[in-house]
Length: 159
Image (cartoon, rainbow, N blue to C red; front, top):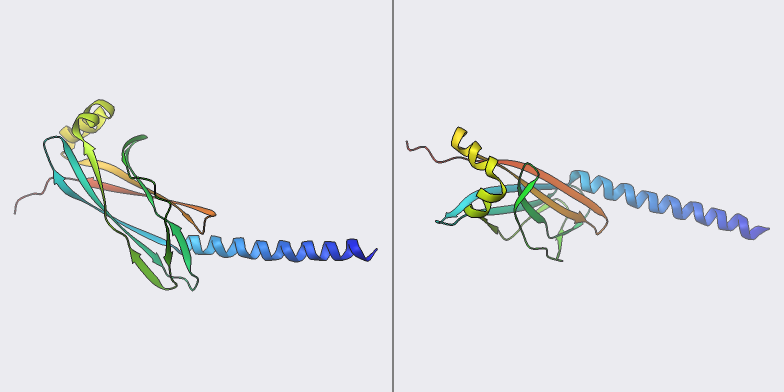
């Protein structure tokens, strides 16, 4: 009869340990900050190139491994451009930050005109392009993390 008793105690201890680990991961995912900066990198006859800089900040006392972020440029629910998927882990040590290599996404004017005509209509009316940069990643290979940043691309006003 001792066997089932010890089995239940062992299962209880395992449940507490797994629960503590999951709570720790949740806390780390809530504290992780992803700072996204977007700038117009180049304008050509056929496309608008956007330079996206991402900084991962870890203000907690635990080390975090983050998958290389996947970036999408969207307008409404239409995806305009997206980065390449990379299976790379980035370690962000406690109380530190990591600046990633900039990502250049090309947004073709022809594809914009055919897939998102409302965007051109909006630009003609307001003189601005309002887009969403959606950043998705995974923390410690178990918790999904997503962040949306709204960017406003407007022509520079001469001073």
